[in-house]
Length: 263
View 1: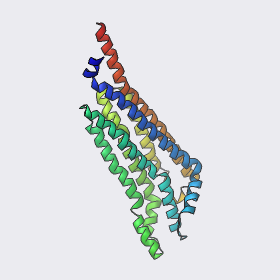
View 2 (view 1 turned 90 degrees about the vertical axis):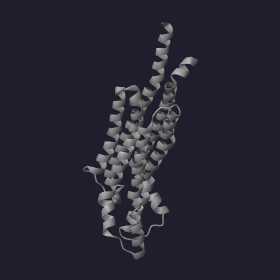
View 3 (view 1 turned 90 degrees about the horizontal axis):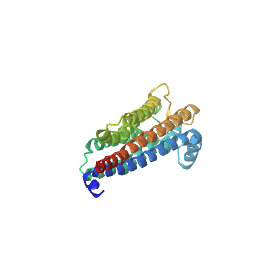
View 4 (view 1 turned 120 degrees about the horizontal axis):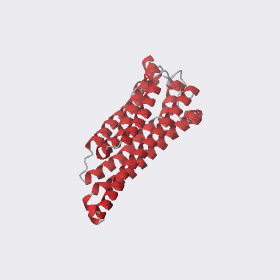
């Protein structure tokens, strides 16, 4: 067995890789399902709670806009921030451990880097126009272009960026592992990742195109909640498949070693 450990070190590191990937996938799945659950059942409570706690001026449109921004900060932005934390402190550290045994992981790490820039774009799309809102609060008016942006463009832009960046995060372990196992089940895991992100992008760009002024409407709550639940399920199943494939490397190596001893 000592000889086996020396000859096949990547089998053990990929087993650890599978465990870490499963934990990362479970955390992301719980995050997206929880946000969908909160939006579906407690959107009104979130809106009323934070609108009471924030000192929002009672001005036409401006008050509703700022209430919606607070709502977005509670429900939408955690999808970005926590996904970035998981990708950095779980996935990227896992790839770094592979590199310690001279296992190439440059391509999945590149995908995570690109994803982080797109995640940053989600924050910019949300808060950059607020500079103009601050100016409007000083003058007592509100530019029509700001209202138009949040009513017609913001949701599409935000969830398109989120969907693409999430897809890059989800396929990064598949890219890493497929070169080692060539397993067809990883293709199915990639399909589930694509389904989750494509559903999110379709939600924002299809017939459902809701203004952020109407985030507590039943149409939004049911659509958003359902999509987030679908994303959570797809993420969990995808990472479970990846984890099993990674752990199977060690199992097959042990079987191969046992057969060699019997010859």
